[in-house]
Length: 219
Image (tube, rainbow, N blue to C red; front, side):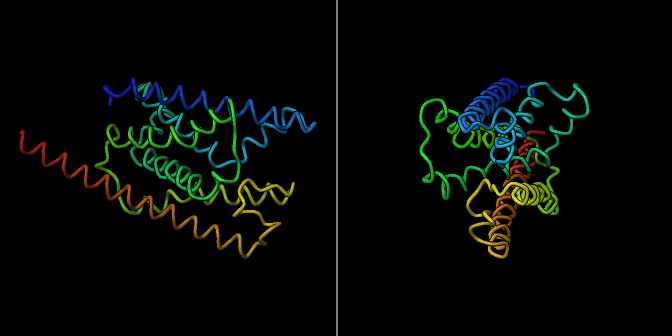
């Protein structure tokens, strides 16, 4: 919606700032190990948090620009796409705060980047989704289609790990857990995605019904 473009622009700029800051620290970490810039970029691109925050920043940038800026912008403006992104960023926040936060203690600029991608952008985007994204076209089967992104990420992580032995999250660490246990973890995480997706569609359809009813009363 045009009246929320300022919020979308602010969110996109903040999201990109957090992503760039996180990238800078990733490169610093790998350079300190003697591995160089490309290793830092490769490390950075291994995290679901980073990839999903990129989608959030792109979706908000598309909302700030409006539909007249090409097919990529129009793709990110689709209610189904924006709801799929809302599902993913909600899971980012939930898993990080419930399972991962206690595993490390960043400070300084790295703490700021961590707060942006895990604690600020998820509620900000969910707020934008709630107040600005039209939801009348949301359908239950879309929830299953949306799982292609987290499922694709899982296979991406497995391929990366098979090549260099590094896994970004402890519940996906094949070296420590073995493939059968990691697969069970992946199924459990996927069920969490499905559950959040169902909740978002239910909320979206409820909101759309209320808006239709309000429109009929004022017509």
